[in-house]
Image 1 (tube, helix red, strand yellow):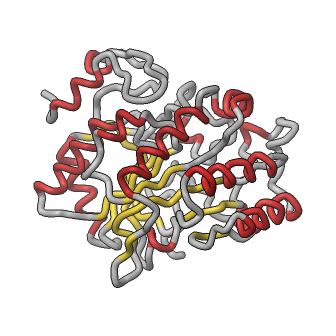
Image 2: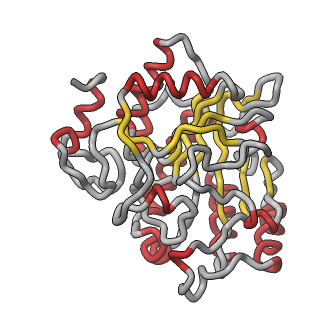
Amino acid sequence: MHLDSEFQKLSHCTLCPRECGAERNYGSLGYCKSDAGFNISTICIHKGEEPVISGKKGICNIFFPHCNLQCIYCQNHDISRNSAAIYAEQLSYKEVIDSICETLEQTENTVGFVSPSHYIPQMMAIIRGLHKAGKRPVIVYNTNGYDKAATLRMLEGLIDVYLPDFKYLDEGIAFEYSDARNYPEMATAALKEMYRQKGSTLIVNDEGIAESGIIIRHLVLPGAADQSIDVLKYIAEEFSPKLHISLMAQYFPTCLVSGHPLLNRTITASEYNKVVDAFHKLGFYHGWVQDLESHASFRPDFSNREPFDTSV
């Protein structure tokens, strides 16, 4: 028996922009190859997020398997692919809650749901389970940005911090790289809904940990500096340069793109500096700009129980 009425939405599932209509409550697998169970790739402490997310102790991140985007360059491909074996296991609801509660004690009292767009009912049930257990952590929705605004409206009041990627504004690149031609349309609508809920101000506590707001991430890709600048212009013009932006240089070519003509290398200093210059010229003054050498870090190994280095 499912725990919440939201699980009914997994019958003829249209939670994410794929709207593939899979009968997930009856074992049918749609685009995301996910059923109605509590499938988890890992529950772990992660210290590699933005400083207001990780703090000194780190965040308790729940990584869901598979993904509603299939980015050919994904650094988490060991758990995100929909067409190959991945690291994941099905846990009971109690096992999930107990594991999060145990891990939470070692963190900044923050829980992050990573790639949750296709696991919304499970995520909502977990949040309510934590509340029932007497835990009231800051909840971070760590998403690729490929969300439906209508689904995000269901989360108002449950999510404290939205942490979306904003990958592309070009439909052709979105289709080639992520199999989602409508990514720009859906991601911009999703951002508008997040902005409606949270506004431009990021609220932090006395320890500097984010308690409410939005942080928009953008990963600069090789050969795509102009595309990155277009994304930053859109944010500045359609929303506000007061928003916190996490500009990332950590792209590294995985084995899956070793033969790609553009994605088979890291970004160059000239590419990144061009984007960073635009970031400042557009008036952004809240957020973080990664070091160019970041591609040598942030490489998870999901074959390990602790996929990230917790000694950082």
